[in-house]
Amino acid sequence: MNIGNLILWGFAATLLLTTLLSVSRPLGLTRMDLPFILGTLFTANRNKAPGLGFVAHLIMGWLFAFIYGFAFESAGLAIWWFGLAIGFVHGAFVLSVGLETLTFIHPRMASPFQGPTPTRQLEPPGFFALNYGKGTPLVTLLGHLVYGAVLGTFYT
Image 1 (cartoon, helix red, strand yellow):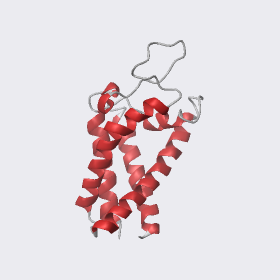
Image 2: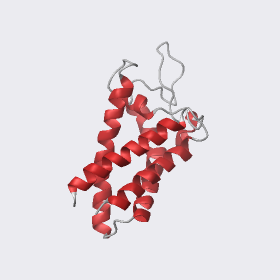
Image 3: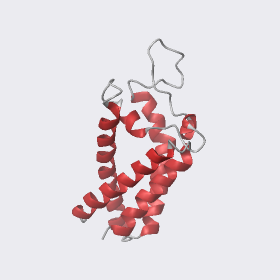
Image 4: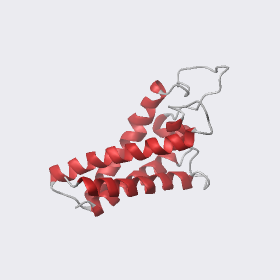
């Protein structure tokens, strides 16, 4: 496994994924702010949350790059379309399991089974994160497809 490649291209792929997700908000495709959601896992300070969340997302991107690297090495395929396929599975997992699980561990996110509380909380993502907008599944999946394609293209 080429660790240097995974660190470099995992960083680049995560930046692209984060950029796609961030640009899609002002374009009205989604209301999901992933760095903010991740940052509020660690702090109640809403001003510091985006920065902390960005760092957390970057670290997660590097960790996932190693999983992609294991898949590339195991299959003997380090090519863009195989990375795209892994990215599809990754994105589908994030939408169907990852964000849903987050509602149960996130201290500042309302549960889908919880009524209104006096404390302001983050909205739960819902099925395929549709509570954040109809374009959220598409944008999230597209971001992960790009992430996988970048890793598959440049991993050697």
